[in-house]
Image (cartoon, rainbow, N blue to C red):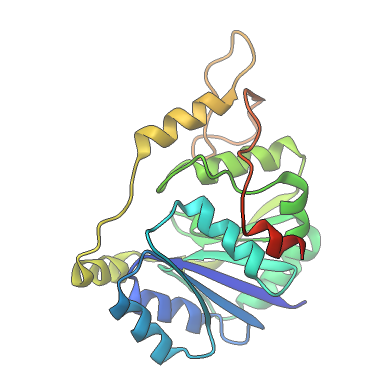
Amino acid sequence: MNLSIAVVTKDGTETSIRALRSACGVEDALLINNGCCPEHTRAVRDALPAVRMIDLCPSRGLAHCWNLGMIYAAHEHVIIANDDIELEDGWRVTLEAALQEHDHVTMAYPTNRWGCFATSKAVVRELGWFDECFVGLYYEDEDWWLRLQEAGKRVTPVDVARHDSALRTADRLGHGTVLDLDPAANEAAFYAKWQSPPGDRPPLSMKEAGGRRVSRRRPERKWHIHEGVWNG
């Protein structure tokens, strides 16, 4: 099985290098620089010249970056990761076995499995793009989780990627990075999209409990120009 990995970062210089190096042996590696400063981009290019890069300026929401990762990945199976993860020894054997049996695999622990996940282009083609109505960060993962459940996809966790934000915090302090966060707007978008059956309580996010019945109020937001690359 050939794999692509797409790491999303905003000025996570050392974390980006660490994450990509931990994926040693992967057939295709892509770094999505989400509004990074030039010093970060140069440092990563010098350390990892074989890694392909997409530079976004200004920064975009995480869902947008995930879409770019799926579109520009060279292979069918794609790992999408934050820059503050590190794949552990033996990760590939475990992940490939899981992908043979499941449509979607969450990978990062102990606290943030959605900091790293793997799926296929076929699943994204079927379910549609990651929803870009979620700006900045938050709720794009919970939306995707509900859509996987809605479509009856087989999802499983594996413990092959360690999540550690300490180094990323140091990176961002060094660059003076300001994150694009709008949790209130994303929460409103989430509950505008998903509702529970009449008489039931509001839909639970995946962080609270999985498998709860919900229904839609709106479809996914349609995507735009880069879709031509996907279809080409």
